[in-house]
Amino acid sequence: MSNLERIQKIMKENFAFDAVSASSSLRSDLCLDSLDDCELRMAIEEEFDVPVDDDLADKWLTVGDIEQFVKVAVADREMQGGGA
Image (cartoon, rainbow, N blue to C red; front, side):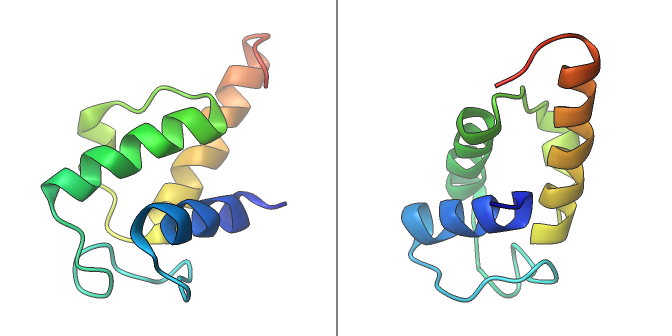
């Protein structure tokens, strides 16, 4: 399962969104609020076993931004010898 598919699964399970693409805006398209942001961050941390810094997550505008964050965070973790 790709990172995007795993993120889409999180969006479906936690927020009941069936159709989410990389270009979906977290605010405009999905109408996530600050409480949803916290829930999303925790779900990303749990699913990908990576820490999510609040300052970085505050810059997420789209699902694609989350996908890019996950790609980099997982690569960094694997370079440091960690892994899920």
